[in-house]
Image (tube, one colour):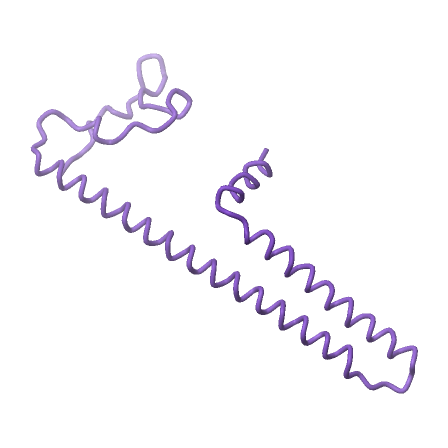
Length: 143
């Protein structure tokens, strides 16, 4: 099986690492450039197949993660809608003898409805963005 050459991560004579770094290149150098000269085609084919299999597994995990996140988003929005309905029902069904207490309880319940509606609208607006818009927002927040 393919092994990297022993000195490809060695420290040079000046105390500087000799492998490619992100400071010098935009992307890391591919492993294929570190293959020694005495490797047959079958070993390279096996190494490429392993890399391909790992990439497919990563893609499958990310695809599953996206599906799970979308389902979770739907459930959050459904939960918030249910909470709005519950608090709206509480605002209407409370029976108390003291009229000033009734007004306060109703106001509190309606405030809860408004709060959950606002949270739901904010989540929906944030989650309804395209992938490009979402990336732009994340990059802007990091800067």
